[in-house]
Image (tube, rainbow, N blue to C red; front, side, top):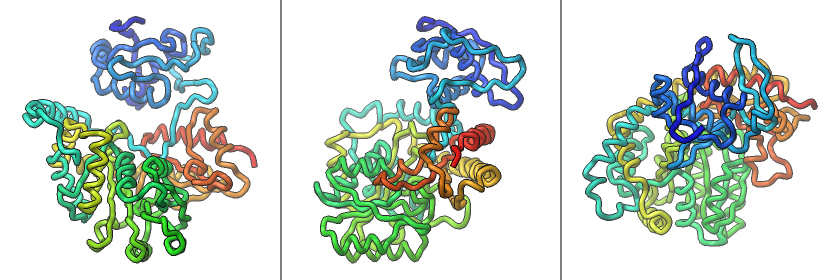
Length: 480
């Protein structure tokens, strides 16, 4: 199949199957029967939508779904191709399936069909029409077309103004636009925060189990990381205080108090106040990662540490629009005291002179016109239902093998295995059946005695997909 040619296929949704999933299933069938071979280019979304008389967003969603599953790969400026690491199905033809029956794609061993991620949002919920319109307006705006110099390394002023109002209204956080730094995702913000507060060789305390990419960012900035145990109330502040008393290299503490990553527990008020007190007495900077604040399902919203702290306690507050929209939209932000923010902006300018101005301008429009808030409300309802569905399925099918506490919010469940079961062995068994799950060893600083647990993200899968994923998960359970 050469570039620019069409793909003649017939798309027939089954039962209540969404059209984009029917298209994805049809493309998989064409790969399985050898018509599409590894490395073959696919038509562009616009061309295929015209050929099939489908909405372009439907084709785009199908391509994205298959890329997530590993069937397709997308190369910038080149197009979309069948993954090159697939076997040539023409050499191994698939058995013919009876017409009219459900056709679940069959992959070779270790090929992932479904992914219970660590808590990624569902990109199918993104308000793509509003986003595309805002992006087009941004590209046509005078601020973009007439700009002859690089912009502010802190980010687009319109977006920083919009975030200032958003954080005040939604999180009780008073931050002027001048105190906000926009970054390409939260990972950059983590690196810049560590660069600003920790000298090479100094220590940053982190939660254990915790967020491995934060540890990588801190190490890349020259800091060492030291784990502090997490219990049912979040980070153990007594253990943190003991470290602060005995280790003069400690400069900062990194925490995820709203929904601890990965265990999902919420830090209570008493422990929050105790953490603020320890940080103040020992001169520690708090790096607060509030990565999924919008997703609170039960109880009242809990204000960030940064909204409670006195002005003399330095807190770097990190947030992300990637968790709210999609991982591919790389936009995070940091709120910090002026002197720290200046250092972060200086380091950011050395790495990346400015951000993506059209993207930042477009998101500013979506924040200002209420699109982001409306999307958050819709996503919250959807994810709440998915949380409850996964919880019910886990109780019904795996209550004798594992336990969990229903999280008040967030996009994942922390499933703790009973004695005698290995999370790594279970994950390997699930992979052979086409399901990707993340065992506890991924979240521990040490691999000697990792938590025998799974972080099971429920947000990215719909009701049918979640049910199928838990079915595979149950079938893949290894014997004790």
